[in-house]
View 1 (cartoon, rainbow, N blue to C red):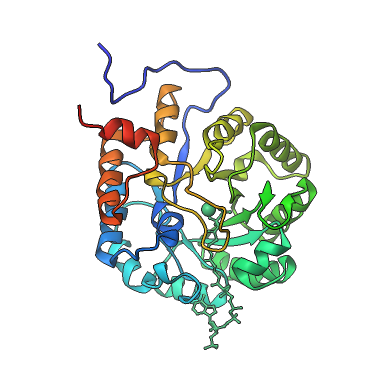
View 2 (tube, protein in one colour):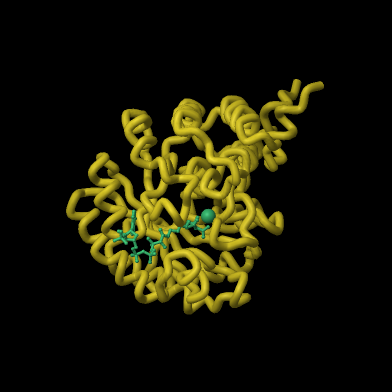
Length: 312
Ligand code: HMG
Ligand code: MG
């Protein structure tokens, strides 16, 4: 008998046995919602994600509250979830943000660079190099405090203002973040234009320039429906950290053509079908996204959420 809540497991060759899902729904998802979600609902969202088996849940951002009003409650939210038995990374753009995060006991920090000048200006009000200069003391001080640091690189494949992004431009920013002391990088396809060959080319170039695959995570938005294909290519290359957002929430307020992230449920369906362990309970995760969709008053764009929550 088949269980329509589970894919049939048929492993494929040369894939990792386990993948760590870096859940970004509460941050990348909610930062882009028109409706600001009450802080208690955000805390409940994070708790439910942890109970569904996600071990890394990006909680919020300590950015300027006027730049991202949806996450202006970071000081209220973080203490409500700090005791959960999961990693809770937070975004920090500068020393002011780091001070705020460290004061609340944050142990995982993420800085967020751009591979393009246009997005660096739109998102951080800085040039690419000015932004890297802004992150340098953040990474140093975070490492001194024994925090783990992730370096995001946005617009790794295409940019809404500049078009296709040359790979050497991406590699330069990645290397700068690694030299600064970042523990891992997340390669952002902010507007979802990447295709699998492009992903493999970037990963290979990074390896050739000395950045090991073990330090690389992938962060795909699903604008053109390519996120799962790109993820599979990255897994075949050896990547084991994949960012995703419960229910496919997301986007970026400073890149208008960015739609939702790869939905965590769609990712989990594929990984479990391939026999790859994630530790995630798909039914609980779907129930969480259905619950969140009710709060946001719109259905989840995730195909898997729709299929599994469909009433017969
Ligand atoms: P700015 O206007 O240049 O700031 O913004 P400033 O450095 O000139 O400071 C101006 C004032 O803001 C000062 O106050 C600072 O103290 C204050 P004043 O002295 O005038 O009273 N300030 C802060 N207050 C609270 N918290 C802070 C902070 N920093 C300064 N951290 C800034 C520069 C970086 C602050 C701004 O551009 C910003 O906050 N940007 C954040 C944008 C953002 O969060 N975007 C979304 C995340 S990125 C993303 O989604 C992509 C990703 O998902 C990967 C992908 O998909 O590609 C990660
Ligand atoms: Mg993103």
